[in-house]
Image 1: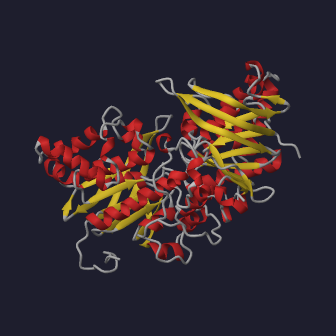
Image 2: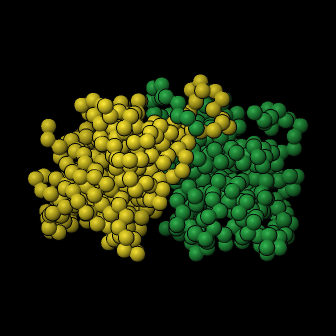
Image 3: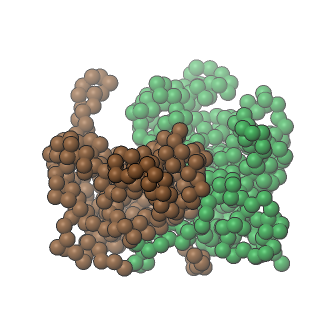
Length: 280
Length: 327
């Protein structure tokens, strides 16, 4: 097992550091009165390269707002996001454009994040064109190697997203993100829409990519069991705040905060009476 | 005890745009007992949603029930006239779908949406309608029935919206509720809350229920019986505790193992590989002959490719369709 940033590399530079992130949305009630919604209320955390931080919480706890802020899709109302030493919040549009490809987002529903009229090949070539690094004849082999990397057969390059299964679509979404050679993948409920057997396949793919490419993940989920399986550290969110954070094992074995205990209690379990092992 | 709903040898196919018939359900038979919660477990493509809609003949235009019977209250629903079906759907058998925000009218108050379901199935008079609606809301939202009833869907949380759908489903006093992934879009705490609502209703009203899901963990402690579908066929069916604790079919076993456990003492669970079922269950990967799970099965034998396994009785109530158990 490789050395983890959280225990082995104290002197390592963090890949991403969020400091006191605040995001306020103004909303108008039906009566016309202005109301404020505090989606993020002073969120701070650090992610080291090659590790996984899972952010868990119920719907409405601010997880997805956090993802949008980190991916520069929204600007936080206050706070700083340090990515490799640069503050994304203060960066100008030009400089930010340089950093942005390095942080990629994978959403819950691949069916709505893929262009339905683009074939697999077109979907993968678009980010390659945007990088302006490759000659036209290099594109197709690169797309093929991306497919291979995520465990898809090159035979499917001509297919449309509707002709793929849910698991294949999510693999394609991951391949598209990898095309930009990101350093951080933000997975916003990326497994939640998949069947259990597909979730396990994609989870294994994520683990593989982490060990082969040294990928760093921010894994946002309400599935505490999957979070515990994938993550080095878990941060538990409730009403826009991180209420508990620590190594995955500690969170599971000694949950301190009420929210964590509630989330743990809500994890459905199968009584595992001596299941015979399934060969791989 | 006689079953309230009896499904016999149900075959359903969809016609593709090229006119080819693709089978979705392939000879499914089972009975639902009064007051029973039957969990139907299956992945996408297993035919579980097709099952839900074909029981009350709500298949999309390209779907065809090619064979079988669905007996309910002395009638075969597959032979029933449209007017007869209209009397049964929503009144005697009701359906609950996955996405509550799509199933509700966005600009109509929750109470009105429930009242209209009742009104559509006979008009007992204004005050009786109002009284019955109020009763159902009190049942499902014991604490804030009035507020929820006056709210619009966007003012409600996902769990509350799902409960409004449940209110619609039970307002006419059905004996069977079919719920297709009713908790899939909810977070775990809300999922549990909805399962509790279902259990309470079962206890109070004696509802029988078909609960369709892809998540085996939801069924433990909730369902009475579990039926596992794969490739349009029943691969295993038995009492929930038995099937969940000691599954027998290779598919059921592999499926349960692919769900990560919250490690109680498993310690080094993280960053290891989960046992997976290789491949997927899309139509194209289903074999034409033999056992539908054969291509992905780790325990396959030669015979699996030759013919379909029959259902084998492991005990009076536990059946499995696998050659391993044929004597």
